[in-house]
Image (tube, rainbow, N blue to C red; front, top):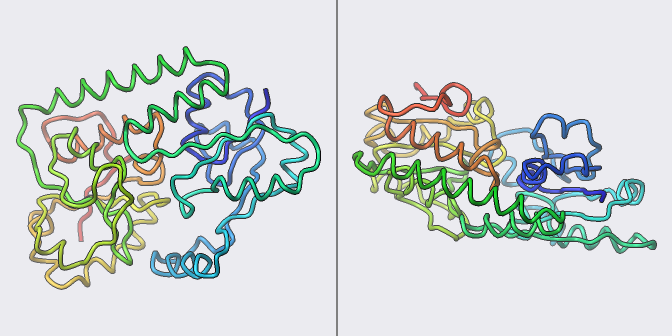
Length: 304
């Protein structure tokens, strides 16, 4: 079987299922595990991904307002790679290549068309379903069942670990300018980490956030996790937050409880490494009580 994965979380699932050798192509965003970088990428964005979050937001909205796709799918590469299976998603047209993009590209292919499966993870249960769907398509359902069971067991263990610790009120920020809170599976992870999630609802898309609400809710902890951003890129883009009226009066800011995580590698990939994301949240929320060794690589405390 020849497989192309056009969503980074699905690529990680394929490799975790032991099917990495079946991969023949990837998206431009698929970068883990490292060996996937040796494969040709079959997509690219139609907009310049460099710049501040406000600039990127404006470029994306401009394309959407014109009813245009945000990504190119390289039909010639699809033909050349001759995949039997293509994995894509319908969860978010902004975050990654969508099913619609793939179907449009396949219209240009006259020969035998590959099977296309699409996942739509909005919460933890959907993520288990995504793993099951992919494992069945790869004909390794038993490996998928094992992976799901291992992830669920670890989630339970981590949640049990924090049960008796004091909960803290947490604001997770998925985009800096304009301000957006984290939704989908992140509220569930915060709750399982022993936190009280202030913005965003489980299973719902990430909501735009009025800066005044951040001030009025007065979180004890603020965690920055922009979609597609690593820690260094988030640091470069952090300044608009400091211009929020009353920013310096927010409890998390006054008490130095302001953190940046690697949103690209962890929180925004609904796959096996969400377990690492949960561990990172636990380290932050219960700092100096529990450590899994993610500090400095998966998250930092930001000092303004």
